[in-house]
Every structure is written in structure tokens, then in C-alpha cells.
Image 1 (tube, helix red, strand yellow):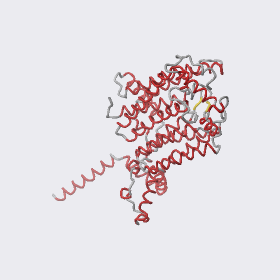
Image 2 (cartoon, rainbow, N blue to C red):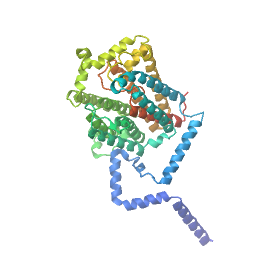
Image 3 (cartoon, rainbow, N blue to C red):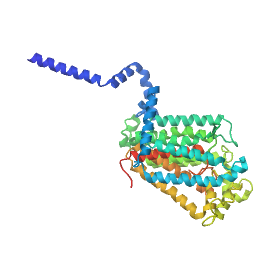
Image 4 (tube, rainbow, N blue to C red):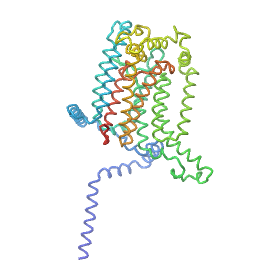
Amino acid sequence: MDKISTDRSTNRLTGRKDEKAKNSPIRAAREDQRADSGSEGEFFTQILAKMGFEAHFDEIKAPDLSPGRMWGGMKNAAANTRSVILNKHMSFDKPLFIIVLVLVVVGFTMMASASYAYAFAQYGDSMRYIRKQIVFAVLGVLAMIVISTVPPEKFKGFISYFIWGMSIVLLGIVLVLPGNKGVHRWINLGFTTVQPSEIAKFAAILVCSTYIAYHYREINMTTYSSLELKHRAARSKKFKWIYGLYRNFQTAVWPFIWRILPILVLLVLEPHLSCTIIILLIVGTLMFLGGTRSEYFVTLLVLAAIAIILIVFLGVVPYGRTRVEMWLDPFADAKGDGWQTVQSLYAISSGGLFGAGFGNSRQKYMYIAEPQNDFIFAVVCEELGLVGAVVIILIFVAFIWRGFVLSVANPDRFQRFVGIGITAQIGYQMILNVAVVSNLVPNTGISLPFFSSGGTSLLMLLAEIGVLLAISRSSPNKIV
């Protein structure tokens, strides 16, 4: 009996091991791969860990690009998109969707009014900008709806760093291509142009949000005891505070710096100072809300301000110093460098309370240079007056409020910070554009979201809002 029971127990254990081995092909494959890689695999693992990938470097793997797999994925995506479009009870946030559609429609209408005179004078075709903008608006809305069906966590990890790397490559390509009026910002594809800086904004949001999601606990460790330091230098009470501060810098500051520094350097070389400022503001917001210590945050703000001042006054950006001087007194050279600002102020003041009426702007007739771009809000003020301008600003405020509420309500940390980053980007661009047009800050060439002409900008904005709608869809906390 003892022998029989022993054999049975042995067989049972052997069977469990065999069953466990059968059910763990992935584990067996990983063990074989680890055995084959040897010390080389451990070496690269350590390098990735030091770069901040310790929690998610295993997600970087080669995708399955077989025809069958790709076709199956395309069919599934089409089926999901069709089901969402036909479903009358879409689960993404309807108020945000309606606000965005209002901004797109109103923005396109005002861009059409502001652009036709300039387009006719320059190209003999008053519909030039209107045709281009309506194509990108339709494509952008379709992209927004399709992307809203994609689970937001798909952008986490590998995809975020892929977009980040692609934006750096495109920004590098721009620098070797012929420039336009002394700047290198566009890639000419023949039928249209692409502005990589718009992709870089989204890339910065994704990589910073990915890092915060994986390392939130380390970022918020601000005391020596919570860091659990075992370094020999930290055993002495004299070095505890210093070493704790250094370790916190490694986890809460340096990873953000090396992620955005390549983008910022390439943007300064274009030069594109306005996009540089926007990305700094976005990343600063994510760092602050992510838990970076206040002393680091204030120090970085001061260093960034000093760097921008030096870039402007040392001539890295050739037009920087002139624009600061014209900001202080635009009427000192009203027919030269101060022309754009002066004409913008004339347009705002002549609008009065209710405006001259839609389509009745005078300043858009070759007084404001390229009125369909950065200074379109001046035309809005002239045609719709103070009341119309305030209404448009309030629509933007409604979007910002709704975007932040939806983002904060999402329990997933990555989705929460991506939503905050996208909302902050649009909010900062709106505030700075209005400030530039009204001469509250120096002219930095910041476009007004959904209003200014630009296919890449509009398409990327609507794609990002598609991600924001997907975040609202995936959140179990529905906002009324």
C-alpha cells in the first residue's frame, strides 16, 4: 500500500509538472531565450534599466507584420469603427465631442473669412486655403472618431517611444531640407506640407506620461526614509539629505530632461521658439502634477527662462531681439518690424463691442500679413467684436474644463496624464495666441487651435482629441 500510494503521489506530481510545462510555453521560451542571450542580454538589460526602462523595456518587441495578421487587424479595426459609428449610444463623452465640433466649424468659418483676400492677392485663387483646410478638417474628424475606438493603453510603452523617435527623425530631416524665409519647419511632400513640430508635441506628452505611469512612486519619494537608501555615503547623517536629493533628481527630473532635450535642441535649430515654449509648458505641467519636488520645479523654470532669454538676446534666434523690442514699443517702427502688431491692435480696436460683421474686416486686405495664420484672432475681434471674441474664448474654456475633468476622473495613471497633457497643450496655445495678438507677450508665432490655417496642426489636434475621447470612453467614472 505504501508503495502504491508513493507511486501515485509521484505520478501526480509528475503530471502536474508536465501540465504546468504545457501551460507555460511562453515561460519556457523566455527561459531558452535568456539562456541563449547569456551575459550579453543581461548587459543590455542593465543599460535599459539605467535609462529608466526597467518597468517596461520588455514591451519593446518586433510586431507581427505577416499579411494575414495585418489584414485581420485591419478588418477588426474597420468592424469596431463601423459599430461605433452606427451605435446611437456612443460611450465617449458627448459634451466634449460637441464642443470640439463647434470649435472646428467656427474655426473653419473664420479661417475662410480671413483667408480669401490674402489668397487671391498672393495666388489668384481665393479658395486656396479654404479647400485645403476643409480636406484636413474632414480627415481629422474621421481620424478622431477612429482613434476614439482604440484603447488608450495601446499608446503606452513601445508606441509612445516609437512616435517620440519618429518625431526626432523628422525634426532632423527638416534641418537638412531647404528653408522658407530663413526657417526650417516643413517637409514638402508635393501635394501638401508636414510640420514635424506638431508631432513632437504629442510625442512629448506620450513619453512623459509613460514614465510617470511606471515610476510615479519613485517620483514622489521625497524623503530619505522613503528612498530606503543603502549607499555607503548615505550612512552618515551628514550626507543623507544631499544623497537623498541626488537620488530624487535621478528619478524625478533627469528622465524628463533626456526625453525632451533632443526635441528642444532640434526646435531651437529650426528655429521654432513658440513650439519650444509650448513643449516646456506641457512637460512642466506633467512634472508638477506628477509629483516633482517644488525646489526642482522652480529651479527648472528659472533655468528655462534664462535659457530662452539667452537664446533671444545672443542671436540664436535671429529675429528674437527685434520682436522683444517691438513688443515694448510696436509704434516705434510702425511701418517696419512693428507693422504686424500695430495692424493687429487696429483690428481689435475697430471691432468695438459687436464687430463690423462677419466678412467685413478691413485689416485682412493685406494689412495683417497672412491673416489666416497666427493673427486670425485679430480678424475675429474685428468682425465679431468683443462679444464674439469672449464667446469663442469661453468655448475654449469649456473645452479645457471638460478635458481636465475627464482626465482626472480616469483611474488609470497613464491615461490621466495623457489627457491632462493634450488639454494643457490646447489651453496654452489658445492663451498665448490671444496674448500675442493683443501684444501682452512678444510675437512668437503661436497658432490658434482649430482656427489658424495649417493641415498638419488641425489633423494632429483632432487625432489627439480622439485619444482624449478614448480616455473618456475607457473611464469607469462617467461625468455628467
